[in-house]
Length: 347
Length: 117
Image (cartoon, rainbow over all chains, first blue to last red; front, side, top):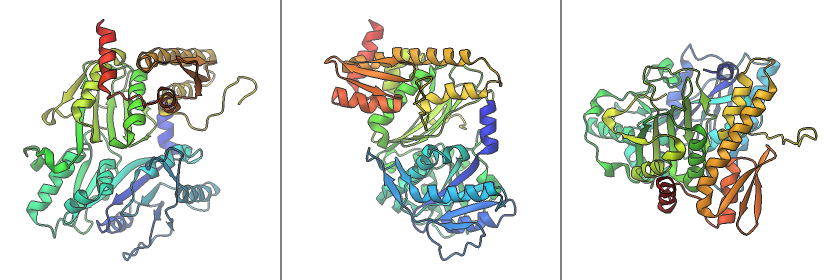
């Protein structure tokens, strides 16, 4: 890891975004997480004080106020309310009025698309230097989750933006439907690690750990399941590697052009890229918002191949692969499609 | 804009520009600033060459503009000044009348043909 990256990790306050559809158990999960003794010095921003009392000294309510930028793209909006609330917390932290913030948790409304939250933190001139989103947690209700995914595009966006998915209410769902939902979630977002939780019971420390290599291991029962391409609607995912190191500048041209032309259909990108340096580049993006790519000083494991997952809407995996193949002279390597059985752990 | 070096103060580095900035910050204190400038210039030059391979399909061309911006031109002599790749594509869309799309089969074919030929 570069010194800069180490410095960022040391100085930037991690932000965890908790999202999930209406009634999917966000607040219950949050109440459980905040009760854990290891979670001290955490500030919480919520949209509404719910029925489940969150008794917390650093609880703030924010009213969702979005400022649409000129492009009119829904994911590239700035949440003014968040800017205000985070700057206030930063001010209190720097004045020493509160203990140093270890973490900020932002709970979204059930209908929120999490992308504007990431956009706000990564583009605000002040916030980008003091905060970094380390984790997007999405709750999905085992009873109604499938229905939400069918009917609400926001629900699909929440799942694709997730680093970790918590399936709630598994205790009251039909075992078969819960299993079907788990399988569907892992097809929509193969890069996310899925947890099952009844009554918000789960290992908080594990849940809040930023995704390490291998963090997306799926429940073993899913491995053998045959895929039905129709059950994920028009959402596709494809894992890609390359037959050699790629040119980072060329990849930047290809991907920034893709985001400009088809950004609203590129729901998620996540992976390691071998750019011919000592370590890989970590790429992580949700719609138009790309986390500042981190150039690591060394590979975290033995496997030094690029491995990248694209989750798209309406864009077929073959279209992406054909395009990368056409760009192979610029990129310096040819793309190879990784099938499910060859999938490699992601950051 | 800084009156001494002519560079803009850009609040937000585009994600494709971060690696050069990160390398500069990661270098030891007192590192040779000439090295950083050389690195940055090489990177920009390389980007211009690669971007032009794509833009030629749309009748456009980009050049480095004083090491701080890029100038994008079409064949009619119209031009746009852009800061980075984030603002290059909207400007290219304006000049070309359509967004350059890496999934466009015609562009893919043109790129393959250029390299096979």
